[in-house]
Amino acid sequence: MNYIKCPKCGREEPAFDYAHVCGPIEVKPKMNERIKLLKHQASLWCDENIPEQFSEEINGYGSAWEDKFAELIVRECVDIVSKVPNSYRDYRNQIEDAMRADCLQAIQIHFGVKE
Image (tube, rainbow, N blue to C red):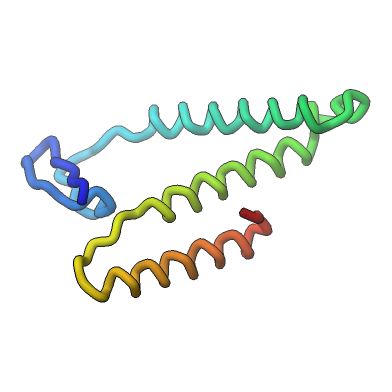
């Protein structure tokens, strides 16, 4: 199991546990860089999949870009949840795996994103 060491107190917590925070932790730059990358990926997808005559809509590709950007965010969230490590070393791992699979499927169905 991976652990995260608190930069303030030195306490180590499992990598999936974000509840322990001794002070402000700067996450915004990383998030902004990730969002910029997803925006770029959505634009590339539109460039490759939307005929040029449709790119003259408001905001370039209009709702096609927004739909792709939202889909990429949902896929990213699903990917993060799917990689959360099991925290138990006994039969409860199977329960965690089943719950994780149910959550992933529910998110994908709710947002209409297919695997």
